[in-house]
Image (tube, rainbow, N blue to C red):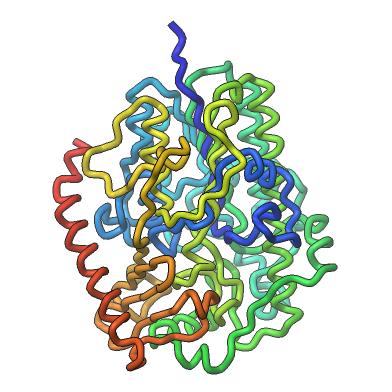
Length: 476
């Protein structure tokens, strides 16, 4: 008897901000395929990741646990298990095309097939790990554009990580991932139920899209937030150290500048957004291939990203902070015929709450020690309880060096960021200051709110310790 459970297509980008989809109210974007998913699907407009860097956030997404519980606190921490194993054990054929950011990179993680493509500019862990993309370039007699080549440019220090892709169109990592996924869908005999994870490396830097995608963005005004001296002076010491560090070390081919020009920032933003449009085009081709093979007759398509990118907002480069430009990411669920679409849900949710919902839709009971709360009631239009708070964590690594652990607690109206071992921190009134530009930490008028948020943070960590005490039993 055929398995009637839905196919699950999980598409995840790397470092994509929430404000990069036209249909969500950002008309400067060109994203027709993501727009379609928003119009016909269910979008969580207040979805927050659990970490400000790749591997910890992804490990949370695919385990349903916070970083302090699953123990993957930085890139290259060992990550070997996920709820994908439950799908595989229940009869799903599980395939990964593109980035997952497990470590080791080729860890099975529950997949039957893995076509691993990692960061565009690997330089620390895995620098000489040759993935499917590297191998495809080698077959053409090419070497990928990367930091060593970019450093030879006379204008390297002025580009803020924005460069032109000079190799063939089909050699770009995001084009390669999209084409490889489409090839697999069309060439592999149809196998159902299918769990297909497609991980695009972009728009993570280097910001190097195909030139034809950059032109429309270069020719229009783009929103740029310019930090005031007051905002920069009010940031915690760990953030000030981070800003300085990023001017001294060119992570991901980005040399940051304390005072970039408007032209430099506009170009960086244009190249970043162009990369999103490139990916959107590939998503359209993937959906067409899935439809052509019959996979979309009963399917759930999820689109999200692992975190955002400051792109100079707040005076910062890339991630490693807890601003909403980092922690708030798109989360779209599209399942025509199975879930009523055309809805935007404003409830506060953690991104990893999607995991147990997908398991339930696949007829699987989520792990008993999961810290995620299923989004299934929201998806089915039932009465659902939003979270009072969402949380995110970031441990000291080779980039964030000014504190041992940075922890965010956010409600609808307030955000607090605690820096372990530091006297300073962050507190924002999100009603009067939605852009998080006025740090109220230590302000006597807000002492009671600061204490309230710190107490709530302590309560969460204590409850987490109890709830997840036996989580390892799930992987035995």
